[in-house]
Every structure is written in structure tokens, then in C-alpha cells.
Length: 263
Image 1 (cartoon, rainbow, N blue to C red):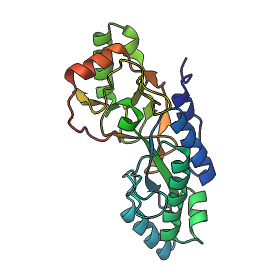
Image 2: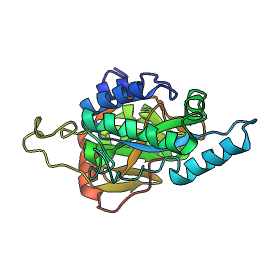
Image 3: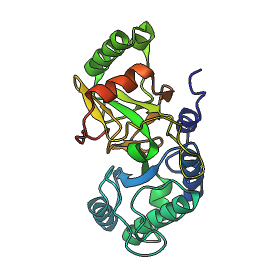
């Protein structure tokens, strides 16, 4: 049933991008518990009319220091020093989100930050890092590519259902297309939950179907309620288990080359 899988259910929960950091922490922790490796991205900044020059200056500094949708830089001090940019544990997520808001506040000022965040002038952004999540993403750039992808999927699988599938996510940067997300038997696997016995991971493999990119490689997929230029990323379809026909195609045609960004 649409949305019955835990990852899709979380992505479609309707979180407000202006939610306080405690809500963001809880949301990202739940995604991590469902098997997702998450990462914070540069905040989205939408400049309304009527802001004073000093506020415009600090917002420009924020976007220059932390470009929207770009991975946040690694931390060199504190609990997150040496921990990279991707998180899979609740403790790291809590520390990461706290540090993220601290960076915003440091640049725009403690007096301005709450009002700018509450008004949605600044909104946090986050994504799923595909290889550490042991997932597969299909980034479809537009409506023409979506029709091509559906035809190829139906022909390859022999299942006409594939002609009518919906992308998991609608992404403003992919108008008329979107991103399909698939889990693998390794999704959620760690030292406490070993991977499926006998399963060979597809991590790192990528190939193209027309203009669409099928990737288990170095892709970060923006997730709701991230905004891009003020327009939200939205959940539409399910997050399915990787079907055997797509697994086989990825193994047959996949390479280790780095694909284009899913955003």
C-alpha cells in the first residue's frame, strides 16, 4: 500500500520546514532508525521585500558560507570533529542539528535568527546519503525522461504496472520528474543488524537510462521538508524494495563513475 513502508511514511509525515530544531532532530533520528544515513545541507534562503540592509547583508553571508543544497562542511572541533558529514546515530544527529542551528545563529545574529527561522526566510535542509544508506536512487530530470523511464522499466520487468509508478519524491530541481528511492537487503544493516546472508551489495554502481540516472553511488537526495528556492521537496510515491530486475540491470550495466546530483 502506498506509504506503508516506514521510510516513505516518514518522508510524507508533513513536517514543516520552520519546525524547531527539536522536531528536526526527532524526524532525522526516526529516518536513521529506519535505515537512512542523513546529512545536513546548506539552508534555503528566500528574501522577502522589506528587509533592512543589515539583514540582507547577513543573509548574503549565510548563503555564501553555506550554499543552499550543498553539503555542510565537516566540523573541526567539538563532538563532531572527525565524524564526517553523514550521520546514522541519534547522538550524532542531535549534535549535528544543534551545531547547524548554531552556525546559522552565529552568522545572522542571535537577535535576528529566531524571527528569520520562524518566518521561513531561512529554512533548514537535509538529505539522505544513498551509499551509506545502502539504497538505490533513480533521478529523473523531467516529464519526458519520466515517460522513458517508465517504458524501460515496464519492458525490462515485463510488468505493465511500471508504466504507472510514481516517484518517491517530487524535487523542485527536477520539474515533471522526481526521484525514486529503493531499499536493499542491506538498508539498515550495521554491527547490530548484519546484512542478509549471501547478498552482494550494489553500493557504488551507477548507470543511465536516457537522461535518468540509476545510482547506488555518491548521491545525496534532498528530503521533505527541505525547500529549494522556497519550493518544497514533497513525498509522492512509495519507497519500494529494490526489484530483482533493477538489481540485475544495476549489476550488469553499472559502473563506479560518479553520477550527477539528484537535486
